[in-house]
Image (tube, rainbow, N blue to C red; front, side, top):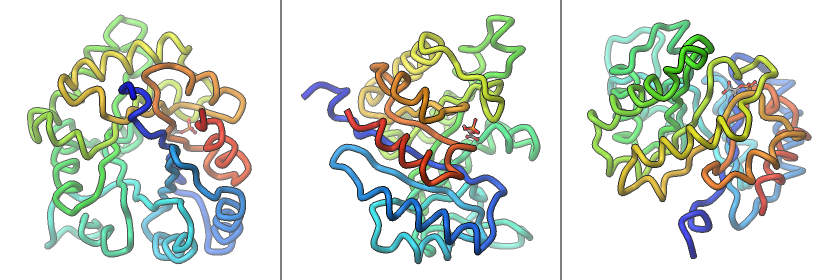
Amino acid sequence: MNERQRRRRLVVGNWKMNGSRAANAGLLKGITDLWSGHANVDAAICPPFVYLEQASEALAQSPVALGAQTVNEHDAGAYTGEIAGSMLKDLGCRYVIVGHNERRRMQSETDAQVADKFHAAQQAGLTPILCVGESEQERESGHALETIGRQLSTVVNRVGLQAFDKAVVAYEPVWAVGTGKTATPEQAEEVHRFLRAELGTVGGDVQILYGGSVKPGNAKQLFALPDIDGALLGGASLSADDFVAICKAAIE
Ligand code: PEP
């Protein structure tokens, strides 16, 4: 079995700040009705914190795992409004997204803080999904790999390479998230190959997802690339049909 075959596929839905109890019930039912799992494809959803318990109950008998959209870097204490990794674990989360570009930009999360969140997630027994990606300006000025390399190396320097054997990396070009623009297969593959090389000895085993306007219509083409192991979805994860169609596209 080669490295590619050894790596399971993973499709993760980031609901962002969307949903209501009623709307979630329909979406969760749609997902659990349509996706019964696959030997080589894992699926997960990341609802807003306040709906994690609702999702956890709805997914109890399902192969779809639960994740959160961020985590605080501290264990407990006077951090009003924040959520610790142990709390996410307590609610049944397996994954947590760290370093999503919306949080890097809107909550001013720094590379160092993202590295601390990655560490805190692992300390709590969660699998971090580390998002990295360049802005449009960084790509146009030829600095995409420099930015992505810096975002990754800050985490590697904090936790060590070996920690990535229990982590997921997601390449999400900022200019492709929520914009309808997708990286070309060549652009995506170049960055995924770069990330794998930067991860050195563990690189061959790390699941590296692509995120940025993935839809049922373009998923298969992206998943055919040798270094793309699945997708992190925003908009498409709010439709059970689209989410499951993309999970099915990940089946080889
Ligand atoms: C995301 O927010 O991680 C994302 C990839 O969003 P979208 O699929 O809507 O571009």
